[in-house]
Length: 116
Length: 114
Image (cartoon, rainbow over the protein chains, first blue to last red):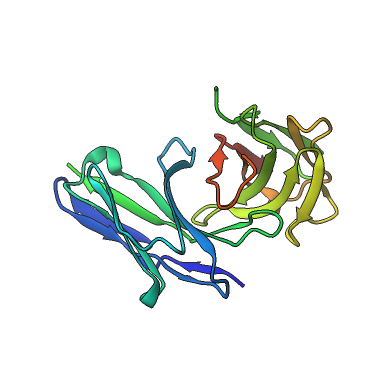
């Protein structure tokens, strides 16, 4: 069975600090997909990134970067120079290889508070 | 493309009443999912449709829950004889067919059972 662990339930940082959100996953499949979603106070989940299991290249998008390491089953998310607008709950999610539907398993989420 | 929409956004009901929620996915998306999210938790999968066919149901979906997607477009989720434990955010998501495609979520329907 697939499982996603986000050990940090809440993090507070001061604006402009860097912050890393940890995500560890478990799966028996060799083909799978990892996601990060942001859930701001308004409640709507916003897709941030997708990674497939064959692509371990790290990715940077503006102030956001992601570090995917299969050896440690981790897919960590770093926000550089955090801003108050980054305050939200962030979810890491895992989808195993398609054969039929794409069931996504979410972690419990990490609530990030950026203090001005 | 207006995104995934859900109606109503909030619903307060008394225990024992029936409620129905609606989800309109992104128009070209043939896959539709329902999730439930309780406070402090991530979304939990409830059920999945590919076009009009309901292909998977979670064990979380008791026999009081039923979902339909009659014409492969919008979907409804009905809860009969609501219980206080049903209080949660009900999220709908859609995606196109394909491996590992990201799901796009609606704003959710927050259900409060009193």
